[in-house]
Image 1 (tube, helix red, strand yellow):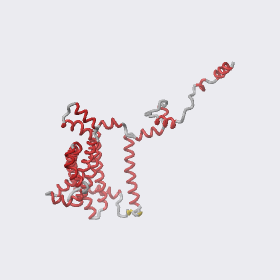
Image 2 (spheres, one colour):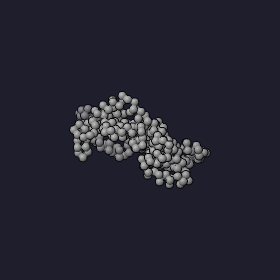
Image 3 (cartoon, one colour):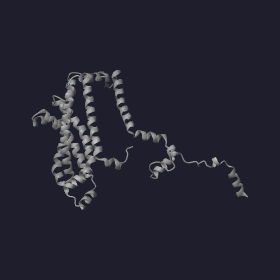
Image 4 (cartoon, helix red, strand yellow):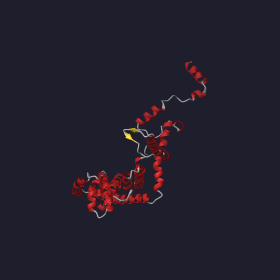
Length: 321
């Protein structure tokens, strides 16, 4: 009789009520438990309608258009702070009385573009930094592979290099002027020194980080030492090499500008120092911004080359969050 009564009550319940899903834990708790258990991706119970707003925002932030928007916001915030500080002449330990406004610098941009002098200085600096950086890249990667691969070569060269490495590139200016026949070559040499050591050290570290299993596997297949360098060592150290190139490019620009300010007669560093001597504050800011933009372009070029040369890194590491 009791069983019949329960069946009668169950039959009177609205089918829609009976079809309602059981109460589940909050989505945040389910996600936490799912993550702790080693899950990845979308929860088994979750469909397209159950995706949270936070997940959509995170996915959008990983898109290309979001990166461009955030980058524009970053630069815009700097320009806004610069404009407000110079407009109201703020004086909170940092003094902005003599700092030009963004409008003053923009007017100077239009003024210098009327003559070829500014473009010529930019071209000379680019030529110097590219020559010095190219030489540093070739020599730094070459010596880095040999030092990282062969202990005898490391014992012969690293002590002398470690003595020279702490010497700032700018300290080489007087010696470079005496060593080389012209200021042009001495400035390229100083730029070379600035980029050489970051490239060298990162290449050595990249070679040392290669798994020994790869070498044993290559030798078991009868690979010669020369083929081992090109098939195992260089691809295995390539990510570290590009890291060294990126760091070396930044140091190369620092070294170049310092050398041009001290001993140069042309170049964007000389242009900036000459503006300081003539008390042309807008030109000083223009020179600094130009250096930053050129450095950014060079760094982005290295990043693009890195992605093209090492496509397996992104595939193995997954998408960056």
